[in-house]
Image (cartoon, rainbow, N blue to C red; front, side):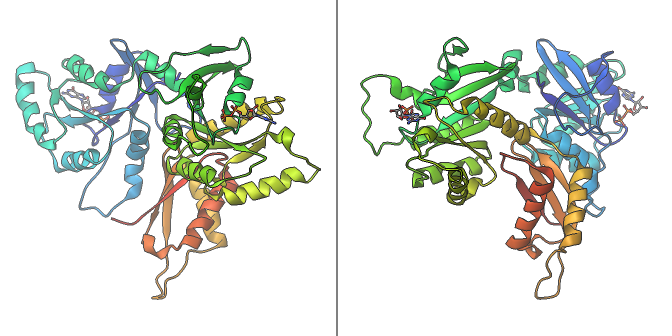
Length: 438
Ligand code: GDP
Ligand code: GDP
């Protein structure tokens, strides 16, 4: 079960670790069970009312505006925030508002994560309210006076915090791998679904309240749960006539948005059409993992080269998602249908994967040593200071450079290829963000 993460942020000495200890109580520090989570930070389990979560202390955030931009300093907080469902900004009520607090708050306001403001070291409830009031200025909503040492005020703080955390049922649902089955009419989406589901192994869930565009089917295999989002399902309601040109591309788009992994189903006989390319483009745009499923393989006359020739053509015509694996199946005979789920597992894992900053920089160093960054006509050379993964699903790597303009498309593609060659990321889009010094 992946619990939501709450990041504790603030400058040094405001009482972050004291508050973490208070929230997590005597429970031991845990080793986070998400794959690839950087080990540099400690994650601790905590709960309030019916909500369970994991707190992570980001260490002291120094955020002084007159120092030169030092990306390294922000890295911890950035990484913690990227995976957090909510953040607690801790400030020191005895010291009062500082420019550092303001700088951190300004930065936090630009992030999408909800922030709860804890004014620590407020031992006396009456004084606390006065101490806390000046922190309204941070623009992060109500300041909650608390004392990490004595515990007062933390109840109100946590009541506010858990408004942003998912319930146990919601957490369970996020543990499923959501798989959208999309493709043109008649490529075999329903047949594939039936092949997965078989007779006894499925539980058909009610149509979820939020969407009537697809029918979800929950399938379990090897202790993993897959929620299959089938856009063809609706059509199975009898008497609905669809013209041949009808495609329901909007339904497909919605299904893609809800999915972790998209199965793009293509008819081996017809090959890749323009509509398939549209879907591929959307999958990439939405940052979803993907497996290309070429169906009706039984209907193709083949020799020992056919599969390679097909693969070549498919890759070319689906260049938006050249990172996706292709599998040739027959929903009718069942050939390789079960293998699709193996590829789904890989794609889902890679989609969520996190790579440590050290590894990313090793790859960068190596890449730069083979091919140094280009020099502009004015003789200015691009410099990459360092890179770090800032988020996952899909993985995004920020590259801190002197001047993004100095890196042409060729070089950018080269760096991306290096990341893929060295680190894999099979089946998922990979985003590179070129960031200047500012
Ligand atoms: P961090 O650097 O933000 O993690 O801060 P610490 O948790 O290490 O606390 C820094 C200092 O503030 C320590 O000396 C703590 O004893 C003190 N401190 C922490 N919480 C409180 C509190 O609620 N009240 C008071 N008076 N002191 C506190
Ligand atoms: P959907 O519209 O994408 O859901 O496609 P269906 O599952 O309804 O299949 C459309 C047609 O293709 C049906 O006549 C199926 O029998 C046929 N079909 C589906 N899968 C295969 C396959 O693997 N091989 C062959 N030869 N025909 C298939």
